[in-house]
Amino acid sequence: MRIKAGDRVNDVLNSVLRKVAPTAEERKEVLKLHRNVLHTAEIVCEGLRVKPMMCGSIAKDTWLKGHKDFDLFLRFRESTSRENLEEYGLKLGKEIINRLGGTYEIAYAEHPYIRGFFNGHRIDIVPAFDVRNPGRIKSAVDRTPYHVRYVNQNLDRGLVNEVRLLKQFCKGIGVYGSNLKVRGFSGYLCELLIIKYIKFRNLVEDAADWWPGKVIDIEGFYRSEKYLREKKFPGDALIVVDPVDRNRNVASVLSSENFIWFVKKCQEFVEEPNEDIFFGKPRYEMTLRGIAEKLRERGTEFLMIYFAAPEEVHRDILWPQMRKLLKRIEDVLKDGGFRPLRSDIWSDETNCILIFEMEVDELPAVKEVLGPSIFDRKNSEGFLKKYRGKKIFLQENRWVAETEREFRRAIELIRDFLSGDEDELRGRGVPKDLARVISEDVAVADRVHCFRFFRRYPGLRSYMNEYFHRSLG
Image 1: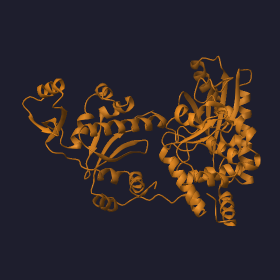
Image 2: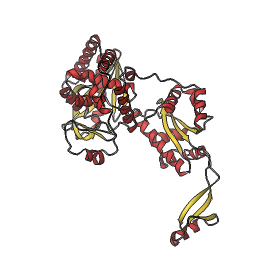
Image 3: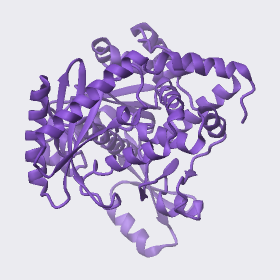
Image 4: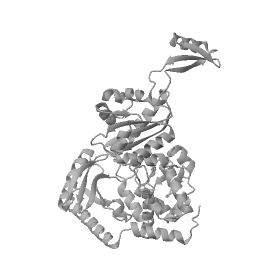
């Protein structure tokens, strides 16, 4: 698709850039701090076999105005043990922050790292292995220095504002961030897309015609896109082969829903370029009356499961575990004869809620069990023996048994499934961190009692507005 608005699109993009590109004064201040952090790290690490390196968007000059986060990597020799990397990574990180006159806390990802605060900025000091081959990493962050080098070598300095436009576009439509809460576009993915397409405008015009399974291989590692779609990265909506590791899809974390949403928003921008799409409509909280009216209008039943977020569990662990539990309970409901219309998760990372919208939440007291063909004697005898004493009849030459339903109401089935101690819950497929908190306290609410959660959590009311109104079509 081609943008039809002519000169207007340039006016829109220039206006956006004036709002998101750092000013000369901000650049001067940030780069001065950037150099100070690196210099301090080099002094602390002097004489040690540890190489400090600044990473992140500031190191690549693709950061957005107001961005106040620094990423400092401490690269340890590849032969270093993980225990020593963690121990000395924390020690060095603390010393660097102390010399900068800041404060710090210990944060956790694959391994612990220092999160420091100074001069109104945040700095993550991350220990990593200085691997010789980015295709053979020892920890998840080991590729990052290679990513920084690749972008700095291949992204023309005149194109950094094109990256900023793409990042802000993704932020405006709610798909920026590669953490497992958002499951969107990472900064590195945005940079690679501009390396590929040169201009934001070119990317948007092409992306308006994308379909799930889109392949981008900048370095031309593979001859067959079909192989990448069907064998190498099956099920990934967007495949962008990592230029520094041919076995990795940079867009693997991008959800199919966010991919389709991105394509839809590109189509809208091509049809009518406007600045609003870059900054998004403000999310508003639905009123309790508005939620009640919407529920009556839909004629469905809502169930919600509430539990506290496990303490000291990183959000990139929390969100996948919530999604896994959601899927497990969906399966339990379906096995019980119920039909969830939609389900989703919400969390402010202190409180967690699983949401199920049901076509029906109560079933008859009896259910039918379909058996084998009457001409299949062996299996028929087993079926008749199993259901001896039950009402048996035929349906198109197949045995049918009528039995009592164990749980007539969906809420009773869920409460039964979530009852028990931590080991029992884990045995039923509840993720371990959630099993612990659910075994201590969990609430399962029907449509009427859901409103106590709507009253308590404004963020949940904002989420319900998106739940009821967002459409990918």
